Image 1 (tube, helix red, strand yellow):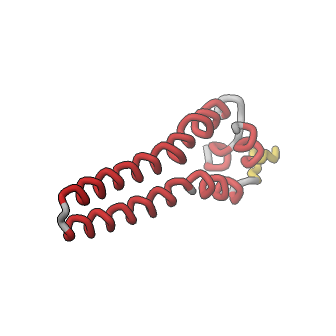
Image 2 (cartoon, helix red, strand yellow):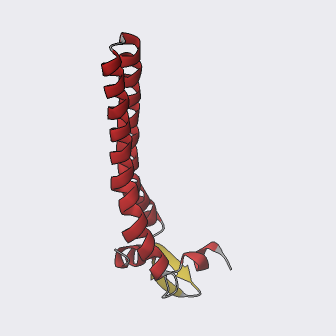
Length: 107
């Protein structure tokens, strides 16, 4: 079995793709950025309450890094969809199956 056969969309693979698109991607795209920003805000709040300038600068840096990470994580689904577009046309034993069609059907 080669990679093209593994990437072929069939009725056995479609539920797995649907689970990833409907179950895992929303958690990754929405939940993780919210958690990162809340954690950064809590760290900054603790630093502000301590009134230590060094801690405030460190917490601000952490918040900025977490916000950048949150934006990057938010775009993971877009990046994956673009990568799926690169593999959109596959040929399996003379039958042309569009991986992009399978990916879109799972939405």
